[in-house]
Length: 136
Image (cartoon, rainbow, N blue to C red; front, top):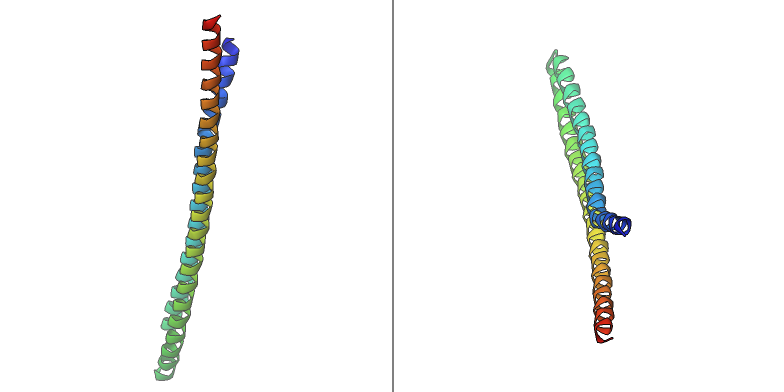
């Protein structure tokens, strides 16, 4: 009998912690994806900046200064587009994470509702059994 109680307790504990485990796993995966993407973006931005600094060191006359200015404007346009793309990708990642979290919370709520119904049925059956045994 004690083994049955321990098995039931372990099963209930697993059911209780399973949604939290899934949510923690999802959060960790999302944090890992976001961090990786941000590190890659930082690498791209630093490479762009380093390239521009190298180009600045090669300015020797008015013509090379003019070319540098032209390239600088092109680079700023490219940087602006890259930042917009990065913001779009991060936004998509966030929306996907939000969707997955909502799905998990919905599933967890449904599971809890089903468990509550099962527990209520179990209590009603137990009450009926104990009342019928008292009448005997």
